[in-house]
Length: 493
Ligand SMILES: Cc1cc2nc3c(=O)[nH]c(=O)nc-3n(C[C@H](O)[C@H](O)[C@H](O)COP(=O)(O)OP(=O)(O)OC[C@H]3O[C@@H](n4cnc5c(N)ncnc54)[C@H](O)[C@@H]3O)c2cc1C
Image (cartoon, rainbow, N blue to C red; front, side):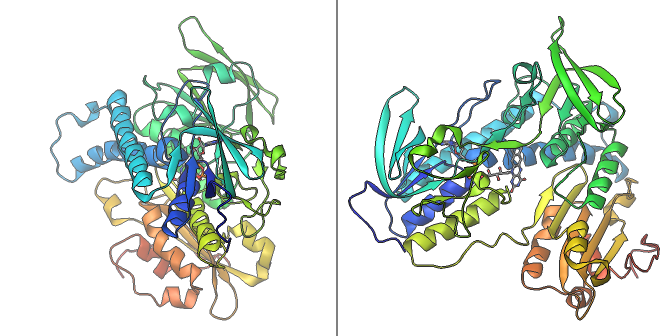
């Protein structure tokens, strides 16, 4: 625990008021520390800017989930007809982009406001300035009007997160947009090319298609690289079934603005060498994010980085002992909001209340909010195979039919789940994967069980809640090794 030292203005200065920084700042003041939190958002190249709270609230999880929900509701309107709802001319329903953006932005503004009030009530000093190091204990806040304020801190937390990358091709920055812009776009996106097939790219293409726009995903190599590749393939197929187009092994060459204002994109298929082009209304880059280390003047503090990320030990401590980092800016860690929050809180407790608990980055559950959602916890099949060897793992799997899909005759082809477990003993569960409705809600509870050491013996002795899709995990009797058909015959016996 750091002894409080009054020679500094603050016990802790947090650079970055996003998920991780705010969580740490609030926990630290609750433990009696004097804390200042700097947050500053540089406008995106397309001019988008936003308020306090970081990526998740403003241009990440929250607006993404709201747009995903908007797309879901459109689908639900069509399904409701099969359930007896009388909707005049359901084929004519359409979404109103500007109204949706307004609703989403109103919600975000209310969260910005509540966050600000919360900081004031909790006595965290909020400074709307861009922070950089003058020396290891001095941070300068550069305000919007150009003035600078110097503050000293016994401890500094770097929680600056990241921003989307653009491809280094002509026209990318001038005409492309990213997730920083899509949720506040003041015009309809229209026919959209999403460049990048990570989870953000797929989610954006998914909700755009669901809202009625033509969506194409350009894939450099593989879809959802960081995830189990069988599940990634299922997600991709389910998107194709919904009419989302994919350009595989393709790299963009240029974006030109035509006289009519539309964007001509040229590309090359890196496998065949074939060149192609098409015209779009919107080109959205989702090719990854870069850490915001550039503005921090880290050299003055002596903090080590690797590329654009900060190196830290298991206690989120950099090579400079009183400087820490949490969240997306950390090298080699999961880039997820609850990870940043949990790491931030635990760090505050270690600094100001004598705790020794470290953040456990293993078995963190996550969800990809594609039209048919995918959630998982633990190892992918590839990693399990690599770590344990084929003879030592068992993969239980099955397709299933959600009850609510029957009446509207929704496709059940891609509703699939699997459990990867040790082969011997009670068969400790190493990974769970699920594609289907409300995937995040399904996985959260199972993630707690996996954290507690769930085994297949316990899972298969758990009585399901019927009729749910989550209960399918308790019915997983077929192993891949058996070669038996994993498609279900009946739902209720
Ligand atoms: C489109 C999208 C969807 C996502 N969906 C999910 C999801 O569904 N679930 C999930 O868990 N995660 C999701 N994420 C990831 C999640 O948003 C991040 O993991 C999380 O926000 C990281 O928090 P952080 O505190 O590290 O950084 P951030 O939340 O990015 O906060 C950093 C803050 O620091 C500010 N800043 C940067 N440099 C400085 C400086 N020098 N001085 C002052 N302030 C500075 C930044 O402007 C920002 O406000 C999504 C991300 C995106 C982009």
